[in-house]
Image 1 (spheres, one colour):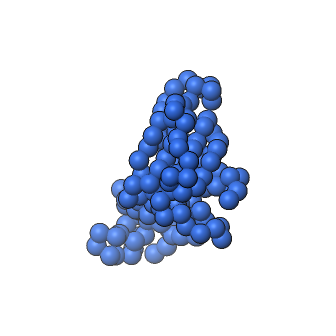
Image 2 (cartoon, helix red, strand yellow):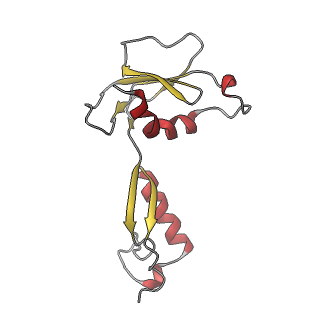
Image 3 (cartoon, one colour):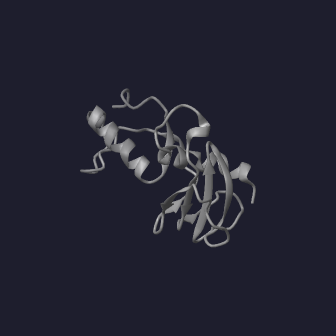
Length: 140
């Protein structure tokens, strides 16, 4: 399995879990993630109970839990029961018109609160980027 293929997909997970320390990469401890169902996002099979090592901003090893032991200095992160996968990108939507709470679809729904609600729903389901086509507020 190629680490280069995994890096862009899993970098967000590592960035979220890395402790906020100085700007030096060398100061970040190694992180050992284990237990998650890992969906690679290419033609590689899903790893049902995975482990992976992140050092600085690089994935150093990815495989099945138990194939290797974490380095002695690594901070362990238990992801049992979680799924790790590439983030999704929604390249075409018309965000803001639908109110998910009452099912309506109208221009009056285009409010800051409704936009935030919809973006939070996207994030919950693994969508990290979305592109609005820009016609929402102009629609009748």
